[in-house]
Length: 308
Image 1: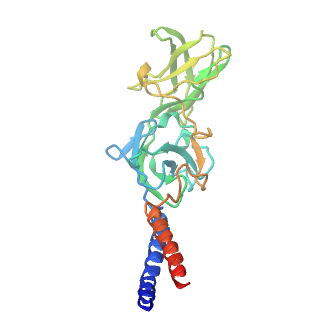
Image 2: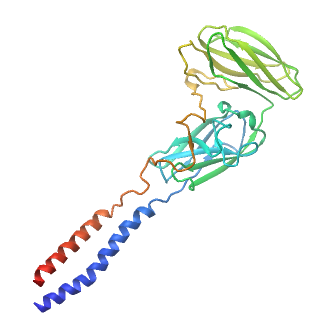
């Protein structure tokens, strides 16, 4: 009997530290799993013209949502959403992360609100994990201001309203020609807008067309290329805007929705919010710890019964 008690004592002496070690490992493991990285890169040769379409991609092994911001000349150091350069500093556009940890974001820069703030300079694009803002990556892109560009103020208008077209013509022209054509290419209106000494122009025209999709074409005989923009006339009961891509005349398959960084589903503060994925996932070793603790309790109970 005495020998049995000694064996139990030796077993307990080795078993208790073992169980404690297993429990500590199971507790620490979820914390270690809470790491990860966020990266960002872009596709291209190293420079783009303001108004171009730029594809960004990267990896996020922290959670399933990435926040994208832009900072640089004329913009807050904290960054603003890519689709709203007038947005709240520190906010950004969100993009979902695939199960394999990769993400992709196509930026139609011509659709960004406040795009006139950008000039020829190098801008920094920042990718931040939505739930862990300290996890981030960045890349810089040289953005060049075009010599000639237009900036439609709206992408959709109701009959009877006015549509404003503004832009820059920096090659010394004194006027630009604005043509409105329908979906079949017929010219419905032709306007002439003066250009200021600094190259700025702005023109408003009255929407007297029927609901449908129309093209605005801005040109000048001394400029090699004409710029185009798509806008839609919608009935008063319709409020859903459609795409506007200055400088590009898209086909139906190329049409993309207008994104604004101020909409709740596209712009999120970089401060931590409710996580979309558990920040401390249950460790796969947790069942082992449970079994070990259960065995410890059973052994302790058995030893107590033998004692009495």
